[in-house]
Image (cartoon, rainbow, N blue to C red):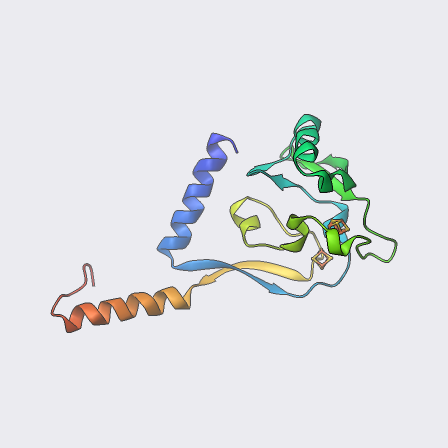
Length: 153
Ligand code: SF4
Ligand code: SF4
């Protein structure tokens, strides 16, 4: 992550917190296989950008050797396709798929400047975190009961 991406990440976190929002993923998998055909890999806190980084990532996690470089994004991140994807669009090695496949799609994609593949059955949005709003309201109520008026309210 370069300095500007770091600043953008901190700004996104700050904005979500200020607006009391969360990143929410809704929808269903349509088994289209797009996420296995053209994906960027986020490994060790970084998006893979070079063959050298990819080789190093494989040394650390052999399961990543199933991926093949198939291009680059406009931002310069490597795009991969997976050799475990079969002709039916399903995974030939489902039980042993890497952790990143198990957690896809994950809200961290938003924080890491990623996007869902075109046509994916899931969608990503930011929404009010009602649990947090309720929690804050209960805190305020407790403060008022104890005779303290919350700041700025
Ligand atoms: S791109 Fe989305 S809908 Fe398609 S297989 Fe991946 S998760 Fe499922
Ligand atoms: S291991 Fe399976 S789930 Fe993961 S990218 Fe490859 S085909 Fe898709």
